[in-house]
Length: 256
Image (cartoon, rainbow, N blue to C red; front, side, top):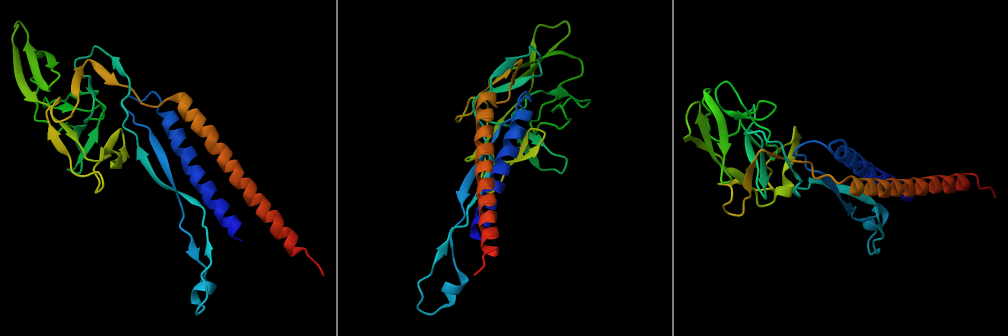
């Protein structure tokens, strides 16, 4: 009966792979989206119960198939697309914008399509505020953001720029361990470590590019190739399942 369960674990693992690839392809044109990839691992062999309980018997081990160990985001940079909009920001290099979540915790994102709410705070497209203490006056004519994160405004009938805040970026010791929660947001986990903050361009962080947005890092050809490989692996496991069922059927029909 082991062949049935081993092939079933392989089919479940490949199903996770197909679902992950489908999600990547669905977000091909989503600004700031980071694709995910599945890590596989062998299920550890286990000693049979009968052999393990017999005194002096040599344990026999049975392989238990494969499993999808984890689904991790891939933070490879995406292409920067120019928008010429003052409140669009892209990160050239490493780093995340820190976002205040409704429950009081913090999320992290590379989606830099920002707006200014009624209180003058910089917010995401979904209305969540950046953690940075930046207040843009309502009578400001334009907003300038430098590569190192300085936020300046220009008032009507004035050529001078006034500083209104400083943006910082967050980084993690292991960003691949961040947990996605949807809406291009990630939260820290025990494996990712705590967020470390610096100005853009310092301590290995990237710089900011005003008037640009980072596109998705999904490559269609790569994803389609992985999808075909996953489908063939699923099909191979289903053939093993079918063959095992046929063999069991033959055994059940044996006569003396």
